[in-house]
Length: 141
Image (tube, rainbow, N blue to C red; front, side, top):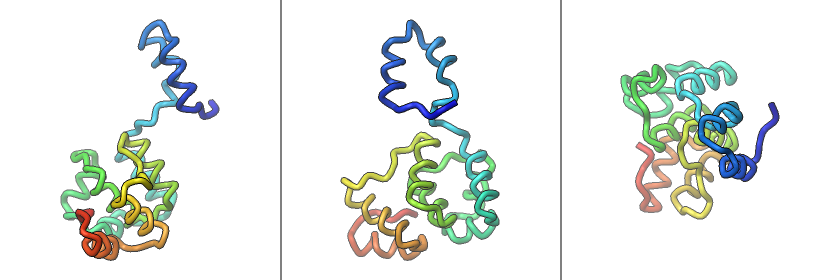
């Protein structure tokens, strides 16, 4: 089924007689997707090894494996560490954030600008944290 614009989905919600009908009619258009499934698909698509991504993410190894297995749900910054370690593009990162129900990176937030620039310039998590620290923003870790 073709993609539906958010405004069109909102209008359909307003016009729907009840939530059950709305959900049944638009189930495939919702952004949420289980994070472990999405991360696994990205690993496969990018031909990445989970262990290398976890190492490059600088997250605690046990915690990161729990994210991949679905035992833990990371905060947005921890998820960003994984996307950076995977070398995702800005568009792929935004898509992952949306699909998992997180706010996307927003160019009107200075800290997000630093992260966006880091993604565009293919910075590592360590390099990005160094820039965030220099700019007096909270680190990703």
